[in-house]
Image (tube, rainbow, N blue to C red; front, side, top):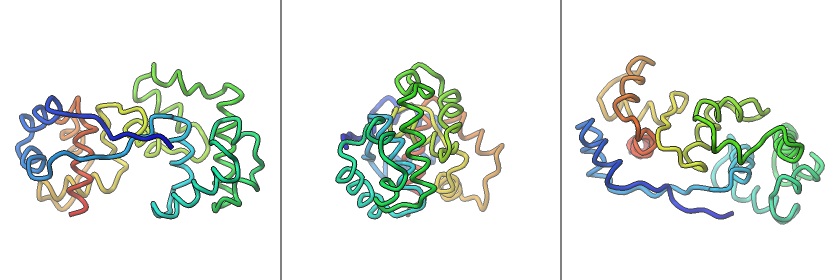
Length: 202
């Protein structure tokens, strides 16, 4: 699986520091964050479905078994496998069905992965979350950790909301407050997301 880390630098950091004093102080304290990006969208999509609701270590094992059993993970290798073969890599039959469905959608042309790069964030989310087994949150994570879109802040991500509550000393965050912060961080919400995750784990 080819990876590199999410690319950002002074431009994004300076913007966030200028727009939000508290986030700026946290960025200074934490320093640069390295998060892996899987640039191949099909690989990222299959890996994200395979790793739902299991630990990172278990997800690595499942991925390794898939490569051993099916060879390189491509739309045709997934579409050509039976749901049972995918399931035997260490997942539920339901999840195996979702993964096979993604392989079939790409091979039969109903999902044009290359074309997603031409679409807005909202349209990418709509297109991906129409697939069985892919929700809005998964689509948002693909926007950040595969497509490296710069301005994604996920309301559905509990750790991001927890990071905000810790950063601003709040006991809860409603949608209106979340949207105010989102506008403040824009157009670099994805970098803000990296720091809010880090803050939520402290």
